Length: 506
Image (tube, rainbow, N blue to C red; front, top):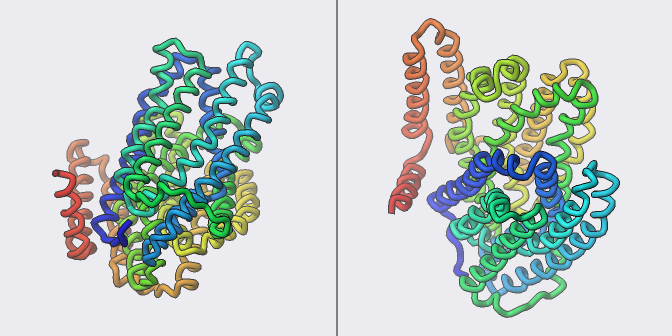
């Protein structure tokens, strides 16, 4: 592996690849799920969806080693210590195999309890349910080991190869149930097909790694690397365990304090608006190994500049989308879910939209701190926020129901963003004025002006014919894009964008 050069063009291309890698399976799921529900029936589809959730949650047996592999391989590339990479990778793979085997044994062991006692599964589905969960248990080590091999490719910024495997495998998660139904398979047979797809992904990831880095063909897993990996990955695990609780606690609170109908009115806009986070998550998936590589070179100037530019990019790309959703929230909900949802959920969607924008900005300092070796800070902050959030959410839900839940979530992510930015500025000594020098403050000001003009246009849109109002709003978006291109993006950033476009045309 050669020393990696981090460039704006490379980061832009990889961010786009990651976005496509998340968007394509999402679209496939939207299209195929109705057919899967009709083919399996409600109860079997409920079991399949629960299996997906359990498999995702059992990935915490990873103990953050997938992220740790990416971080330390990228750091070794930055330091020019390529000779250490095979030992790092094989230590991670060995540890993942052991942890995956433990996870498989645990899941298989608790399957009878889950199926017969905890979950309300009809008697006629008990045999299928047990077989389904046993196949899921077999997939745990496969998924974990795949994470280490994928982490090596991410560390080397080969997101083209990562997504070349990830997109079809993720899409097959939704397509294989349809294929299985067509072939006459039962639910366990369908899950077995998904397991085979995951095994295939593992084999492909391993083969790609061996071809790119022939040194990996020789097994070497010294134990002393394990402590480095686990000390970093442990804090990633803390974050990955507590984040879903912070994300979904409000729904359980609404269900217990208000009603299940209210929970539905809250969950629908929440699910819709949070899908916008595939934009910042696509960027930060690229940033994590980039920050780790630059940390290896100790090039603090480049790290700080990349930090500031990343905040600016999220404001420019996600900001107008969020503002558009906020302004047209009622119309979006009415078209999507009907008049009743529009009446009950518009305010919720608008409050959550503000929180999504703030939370998306927080992706940058969170990824920055983890990539530079301080994964403990985001985890500690989430532990600090947890009891505060529970208390605030309880009070606001009791007082203002689902609007209160949205407000509590937005307050929590705003506090989280403030603390993460403060930690990044203080620990790494990044001067806040760097945000102004890189155009981030100007981007925020331009977005605020766009929001004010868009709100004013919406207010008076009722006086204008529909086509004229829509044309005026599109023109306003175009004006924001032109100003961002000419006044906020620097000449090197514009050149990097055109290089990316030229590459994709070819």
